[in-house]
Length: 137
Image (tube, rainbow, N blue to C red; front, side, top):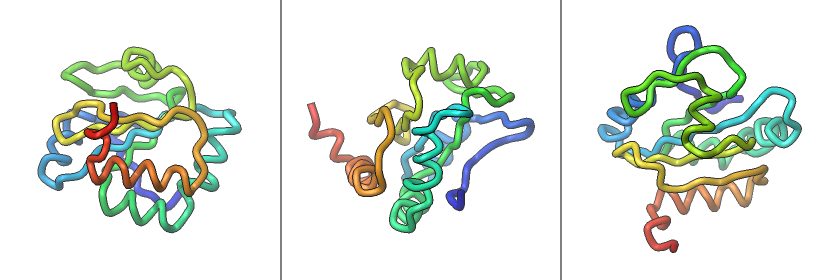
């Protein structure tokens, strides 16, 4: 996948540090939760995230985190270090694929659960980057 993902040593992900970067760059954080062997996850990787318009929008407005919940490594979030699977469960999203969108304060502001095609996901990216989620009940 050409979209850059942000990982630390040993596959660790420091979301706390990403929140600092998000504040400096005025970008949202997009966390793509998926698992090995999930056909819908694979379709999102192969088709949705490989679409030129989707890639361009992500690169412009988001910090992208590719998180396979079965991979080794820990997630640092809210000053805790937990496994990737535990992170997904504790944040309330143990289903895949799921895209979580965090604002510059580290607050979860929007989510998309399940497979989304390129056109649908592009609309989601536009909703989040324009902060139109504030207008949704």
